[in-house]
Figure 1 (cartoon, rainbow, N blue to C red):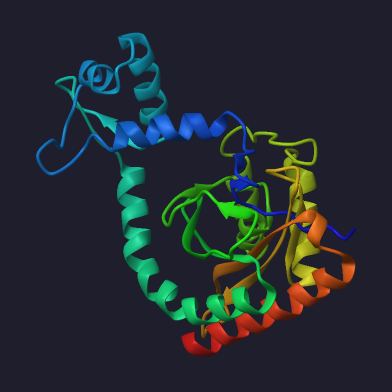
Figure 2 (cartoon, rainbow, N blue to C red):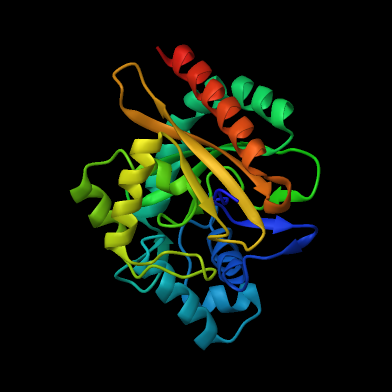
Length: 266
């Protein structure tokens, strides 16, 4: 089969297949959810109390979130939301426009091929799910709007790096250790850069079982009126449903959808 795997975290046939990393993400989200207008700052001890975990466990969560920029340590010992949250909030604000523009074409694509469709964008070193349109069936995307994706695995992420300058793509890929999610996940930066060149030549990104063993997907770039890649639209499907012929059908429909969005953006 010609490759194409989803560049997103997925739950397949009712069970989460993205392994334990989803648990880590859930805990991080629980910590971030403790902040609101009435509580703009919190201590690690309060995190432990609110989550019902040991202080050592809470400190481990907090340390990771501070290192990733999602929390910031205040001089008095408290914690506030960090710069990464602010960046993602700004992306969500700016992404409302392109999301609203892309949704009709995404729905048409979903209806035409019967598969789940995602809209992704890059903000800093993060790939973010801006919008999604789910298809009924066995594939359920577990990323909510605004959630981040790994930059090195899957069509939805790689399509956004492929048209970046090589120096930018190398910097983004080398910014942190790359995680191997399945045996097919590529973690060598030079090989990933070579793959980005292949994506540019082909015009679309395909990946097979890079985050989940049973998922195939394909993504295409969306360009603004100036020709700059500003987003990606991708399709996720169970691999057993994607023959070579069906992959070509999906690709043709996908390119039609991105062309429709680009016309709306011009």
